[in-house]
Each structure stands twice: as structure tokens, then as C-alpha cells.
Amino acid sequence: MSPKISNLAVVDPRAQIADDVEIGHFCVVGPKAKIGRGSVLMNNVTIDGDVEIGEDNVISPNAVIGGAPQDTSYRGDETKVVIGDRNVIRECVTINRGTVKEDGYTRVGSDCYFMGNVHVAHDCRVGDHVIIGHGTMLGGHVHVDHHATLSGSVAVTHYGAIGSYTFVGGASRVLQDIAPFMLADGNPARPRCINIVALKRNNFKEEVIDALNEAYRLLYRARVGLENAREILHSKGDMLPDIEHLMDKLSVSQSGRHGRGRERRRKAA
Image (cartoon, rainbow, N blue to C red; front, side, top):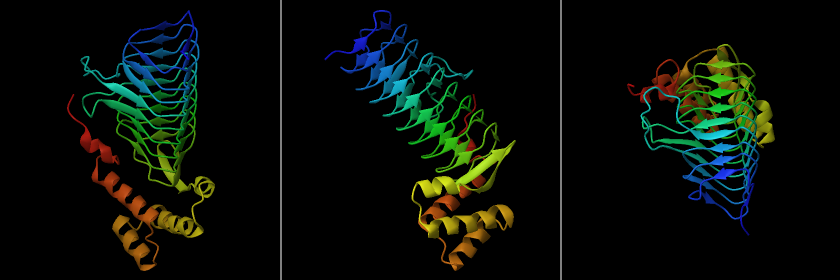
């Protein structure tokens, strides 16, 4: 079985295309592209530069994957985009290659859903089962962990981090890291409560949800501080693995600059 490639598509013969891939009208696929089994490129998709796309992905019209990083210090370095399996990438999504400021990779996991006009900038890391709403923009070097959901028109500043099982409300401006398990909203975005919907949908135990609620109350309502909250939760027997994960992520954020733990990694242009 050979790939089903439209006669109106431009596919470099050096591209590595799995046997059952479908490529629609007016697509452009460059020489360094690698596209896995079962993937579908609808019409007018551009795959530029060194891009590795896994299996069973569906990429909608006018998406551009692998464009050069929008970084004024970029000098044509060999960098890459790597995308996992079973992702849905809707119309006009852009995913840029990485830079040598990190390891040169922009990475997207598996089972993600990117709605129209999403922008994933250079050096981003997006985990598995992530949903990103229409028009949302991830700045350079942003990390989004597994099972996070970002609503439409969210803007995440460079080097920001969105924790696992987090929900970010529409039109939020994310200037600081958002801790795992939180529902955040606003300009600037702030945690408003724990993301109870995601926790229940993903079968978190009631004792974990109760402990996360108490951690949220101590950290964001009583504002007792990270170490005091840790001691109180220890004394109550609430320091479960997910609470430890929350505390560790908050510790990293506080050790950085401007509320962003990864800001420490920034190099001079």
C-alpha cells in the first residue's frame, strides 16, 4: 500500500511518508519530514523543516508545522519539531521549531487537541491529553503538562509553565506558572480553586481531592506560605504523592524569576 498523495500536493521525494498516510490538495511537505502511519494531512497543510509526526494524527487546512522559530537570535540552526500520536491539529495552527537556547526541539505529546489558530512557539513542551482552545498562544519555552486544558484566547508568556490537570479560563493572561490541579482565570491569571471537574473525570480518590482542597485553602486563601503549608499538611497526614508534586512544582516556581521557575534557564540573546 502506498501513501494517498494528491497530484496537487508538493511532497519532496526525500520525505519519509508511511504507506497509508493521506496528503490532500496543495499541501507542501519538505525533505526532512517524517510522517507516521495513519496520519492525514488535509488540504493546504505545510510541513517545513525537520519535523517528525507520529501515527494517526489529523492535521487540518492551513496548519503550518515546523516553521522557523520566531526568535530574533535564530541564525538558521538545525532544529526540530516532534509530535506524538493521535493528535488533532485544527485549522491555521502553527508549531515552530526549537532553538539552540535549549535542546533544539519543540515537542508535542500524544492524544492532544489543538483548536483553530493555536500558536505553539519555539522550544515549547506540550504533554499528553492536552486541550488548547481557539486562538491560544504559547510563548517560547513554555511547558504544558499532561491533561491540562487551556480555553480560547489564552496568552502564556515565555518560559511559563502550566501544571498537569490544570484548567485556564478563556482570554486569560498567564504571566506566572500555574500550579498543577488548579483552575486559573483572569488578567493576570490566578488560581481560583482546584480543578475539581478534571480530578473527578480522571478518577482521583476523594482523599486526594480533599487534600488538594486543603492545600489550596492554605496556599491561596490563608496564604500561610509554602513551607508552613507543607508542615500543616504533614501534621494532618495529607502529604499524599499528588500533594508532594504540587508542593515541588510551587517550590520550582518560587525559585525562579517573576513567578516562573523556568525563567532561570533564559540565556542572553
